[in-house]
Image 1 (cartoon, helix red, strand yellow):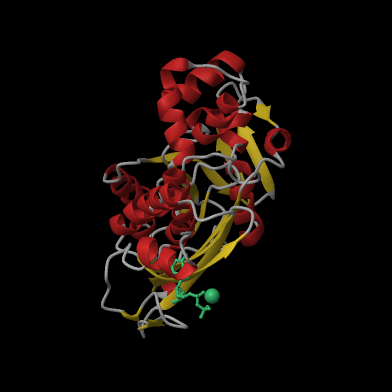
Image 2 (image 1 turned 180 degrees about the vertical axis):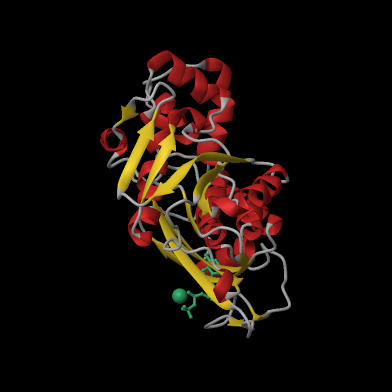
Length: 323
Ligand code: ADP
Ligand code: MG
């Protein structure tokens, strides 16, 4: 007998995530009832992943469950928020139990890691798509917005850049590097939301964004919102061994500069707080690398060690339409 929608929700989603004191009523009624904190703002974000657009048909269901949640937690991280609750809208071509079991496993493991409760959702039949809405808390004055960067601020990024983009090139058969395949696939399939970094940057960063569309594009959003420009030092971009070898072989700096899907954080910090932010960066597993500074002149400039510039806009087209 096919699984009813009700059975499916009960079996896979009702008790998937940890209980929280602030969930007065979770999955099962017409609405969830949540106890909101009075002294904090509720940070809300939503992202949809559609088969064939955001992920390839046949992608591993546990990876998809992880990623659908991770990209939303990444937005909370970029705001400096503490994650609390999520809702999940699933559109499925059919009730495939092994697929659901695997999807729930990937989703549930990441939710437990961050103490996030799944409090409701919707389940419908149709072409595969996954929408997650995430809710978190942050003291309004400490939220990491996009509009606070000022000339003279230093620019930093967490982790390494271009790994997910290189994984896509490998998947498309455009680059082959057998020794790094596992690492690259993991970077694309299992992005790590930088929640700890976002929280540690509260009250320290003047602006922050998570890198979903590529550093040049996402830092561009900070520059637009803040009304300033930036100069990056290309050789300072933090690269994994895989991307470093790729850049050495091809000379293609546009990959780490413009490829999306890494979900690292890009932040700005006043120069006077350089010591503080670098000491904090040393406590992060993902690391925090200085890559340039904010200027008064609008636009993004990318300098090489030899003093020549790279046209940052050029690389953008390379990946446009992929996201
Ligand atoms: P309604 O018709 O009142 O919207 P539904 O039948 O859609 O109720 O859902 C029943 C309950 O199950 C609701 O509490 C809803 O939030 C929850 N729910 C539905 N789908 C999911 C899902 N994929 N994950 C978590 N909770 C879900
Ligand atoms: Mg419903």
